Image (tube, rainbow, N blue to C red; front, side, top):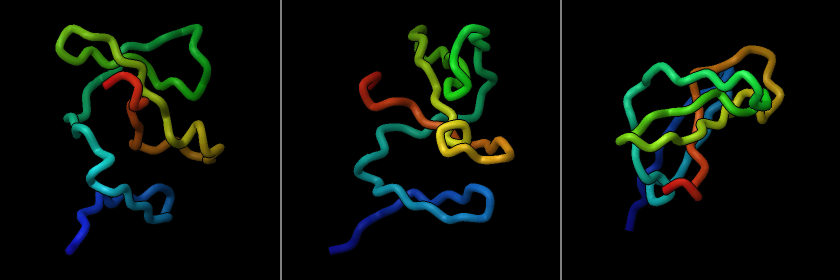
Length: 77
């Protein structure tokens, strides 16, 4: 038995997410800005005419520099 993992790197640190926990990988698109949202919300993604809030991993981890790595909360799928 083997396992598949989604590997990513944030500020030189390597992370892995078990592929069974990944629902979908979308191409990078420009997000709609939410001016009153907390810093942890990067914006809204319009996916199939459905607005989905995107959470910034770097803002949640108190990282110094923003990174191009974000996730969609599981409750939206």
